[in-house]
Image (cartoon, rainbow, N blue to C red; front, side):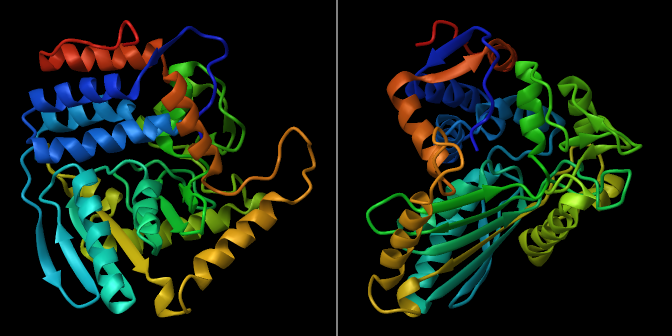
Length: 374
């Protein structure tokens, strides 16, 4: 879902092109090659267009810290390690995950078009942004897609635990539907993505109960304390999806482990707690990703699947709403609508975000382009 509002705080509206220029300028100053910069820029800005501020250009300060620490390869040479008729393993060479994940989707869909199914695992990668964008790419090419990934930050408490052990480990699923945007589910397996807590901290917005707890299991609503618990705490942190034992957090916990095993362990990627204990300063994150693509016509004739999928989505949307002002939607629709609105009216950026990007730009020796909302 799009990230929260800003309680009336002053906002700067910027165009997608202006944000692209700013991100590209910073990445160029870091020494990234044009072929590597282009997909990173596009994915970060596309994420902000959809209102998923937690995974967009707000990631630049983290990427800056990673590259200064020496673990991020700014001139990677990804390579295919294993390549079969329907499966492949890709090594991202410790680069940012966006280019490697795009390549994985392309490989998986190409294989699915030939074999009916394509599965590609990625190892030795870094943060890749919003998982749903990669699933959507496959759906736009006519495939059903499942995307999972591990995560670098150890922030999620296992069911019944008091200390964080897991990452937010996202899962995304997309399916083509005739005559409309695809069904697009993109979710963390924690109650919320850790970076969304960061966005709430930017906006100084109280955290909902059920997102973050302290070491005694008590809810934390202060966004700044919650942010510290998620990224720096030894106890407490994010709850699994479900938010509590009575409301199904064991299901989120199980999904988080599934995403770790499928999205990282399968490829030889790291388990963050193990890595944190063994890694030296500046060692790459070795995050793993996984892409599964299925060609519907390998199972059903012609366009039967996307046609029926479209009918199912329409039936769901026709469900009488409990609140007439809040009609029933399907996964992906809020983000697609936010994208259209932001293309027309600009991307709203608050002062804390602008200050963070301004600091990265200054440290990178490039001008800050966003102050005037160009």
